[in-house]
Image 1: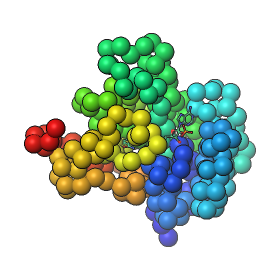
Image 2: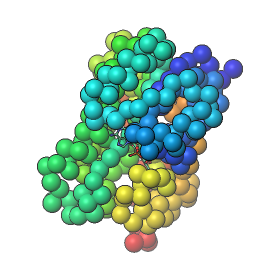
Image 3: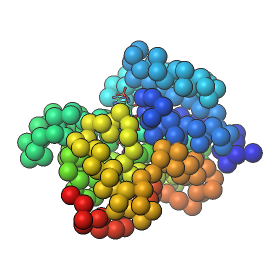
Length: 260
Ligand code: NAP
C-alpha cells in the first residue's frame, strides 16, 4: 500500500515527459493514487493523453487556466466524474520570452499581467474551485523557484510572479486551513524542461546551481515528484503554508564565488 492509496488527485501542467509534473505523476502513481490531468489545446492533447493513459488516468480534459469558462467546465467535470478530490498539483507557469530577455525595468504592463495571471493567480483560481470538492485532510501543492526571493539573471518578471505565488500559498493555507486543507509550495532547483528553456542561459544557471549546492549536483524531476507525493499524503498532515526547497541545498549557501 502506497502513501497515496485510495486518493484521487489532479496533476495540472504536464507538457511532456520532461515536465516536473511528470515526475510528480510517476511518484503519485507509484504511491497508489488515482490521477486526473489537463492539457492545453489539441496540440498538447496528442502529447499528454498517451502519458496520462500510461498511468491509467481516469480523467483527462482540456484546461487553459487563463480562461474562466474552461476553469468552471473543468472542475464541474471533476465533480461529475469523481465526486470529490483528495489532492491537486499546480505545475503551471508562463511569461513572454521577451520579458525574460529584456532589461527588467522595461517590463510592459501586459507582460506583467500575463506572467502574474498564468503563473500566480491561476493557483488561486484552481484552489477556489478545488476546495469545495475537498474534505479535511486534502492537500494542494504548487511549484516555485528561488527567483521569488533572490534576483536571478534572466528570471525577471517570473521572479515577481513566483513571489506572488509563494505569498498566495501562505494566504490559501490560512484561508483553507480551518477546513483541514493544506497548501504548500515546492521550490525546485533548475531542471531542464520546456518552460526552463525560456530562461536565458539556463545551462550556466544549472552549472552554478550544481556547484553552489550542498550536494554538488542538480536535482531531478523524480526527486521533486517524491517530495510532492509526501506533501500530498497524510505523512505531511502537520505541514501547511510551507515553501519546501528541493534544490540540493543551494538556497542555504552563497553560491560558488569562483563561477561567473
Ligand atoms: P513545463 O514542462 O513546460 O510545464 C509548464 C506547464 O505550464 C506546461 O504544461 C504548460 O503548457 C503549462 N501552461 C502554460 N500556460 C498555461 C495555461 N494558460 N493553461 C494551462 N497550462 C499552461 O515546465 P516545468 O519546468 O515542468 O514547469 C512546471 C512548474 O515548475 C512551473 O511553475 C515552473 O515555473 C516550475 N519550476 C520549474 C523549474 C525548472 O527549472 N524547470 C524550477 C522551479 C520551478 P504548454 O507547454 O502547453 O504551454
